[in-house]
Length: 175
Image 1 (cartoon, rainbow, N blue to C red):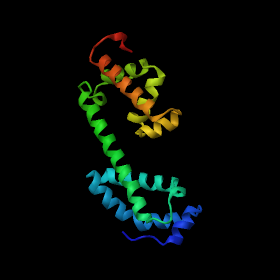
Image 2: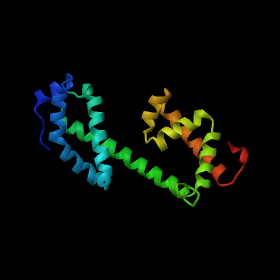
Image 3: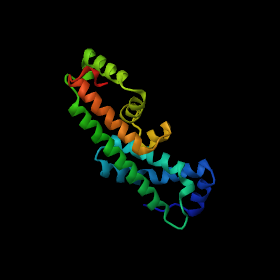
Image 4: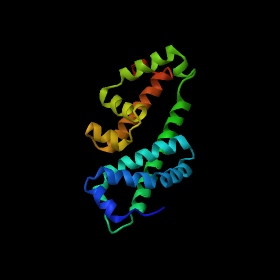
């Protein structure tokens, strides 16, 4: 991966969007290739690459010019890729636990899930929706809600437990 000109990086850090665009054009291909091998899904790799450059732009002020820019960028890509893999795995596990027929094909099942979600207290429902429906990371959900990341994780755990119990035909008062 070719290291960008340090002056170009400094201009991007100073807020020059054209300089940042030039960095993206130069490094997008190598980042996509790296992430594609990491996540083993080309469509997901494209999304992760986009997220990588969003995070890079958002955190340019944190880059220390003594280090290599490409090393810093690949660390961002790696973290974004790991987040995407975890989200994909979470969704796969949720799908395996979901009652069948699939909610998308059964209006009754969709109505049940909506009712179950509506029955959750807002403090449990909001983090669950941000992570599972919107696709936010736990950290992003925590930022949106203004609560610690650990609180988001525990609330989602409780929400999932209540939903599973309710959807499995357990106690109707579980919610």
